[in-house]
Image (cartoon, rainbow, N blue to C red; front, side, top):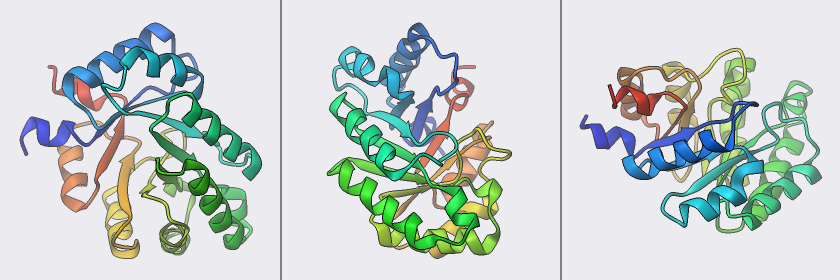
Length: 215
């Protein structure tokens, strides 16, 4: 693959708890210069970053992050607040407690509710595959598809594991045709990125991948 054929799929990410405004500015500049798909940043920086980038790059932020066990009402407020502050895309974490309890109807209802709060903005749903069985992953592919989300995403990057080729294959075989895939967590090389894209991923969430193209 050509360099830009990979870079245009990257959500250039900085979600560390210690992220400073200077660091956020830097990744925004990098994302603009390299023409990544978006820049993914903490909610507290969305308004300032939106004013800084002036629509030169889409801004993505996270809700219910990283554990997913916020109430639906909190996730809806976070979503509406982020969009009001200038977010273009929302990455939400599902409630894994409900998944483990088998309360799939509540998981689907929550995703659908957050999607309504997103209105015409992109919603990516993080299912945190490292904590799930294969059957749970298949069920969640169906739920994410029915709930109207735009993407299913592998990982927060804060769990015990990240994207794997097996999970991207599983997603490709079980999601609806209108749902796209975001591979995130542990993408550490250009070879990883190429493989995920060839398997069907549309987005790549990474804090380090862009740096490999600058060496």
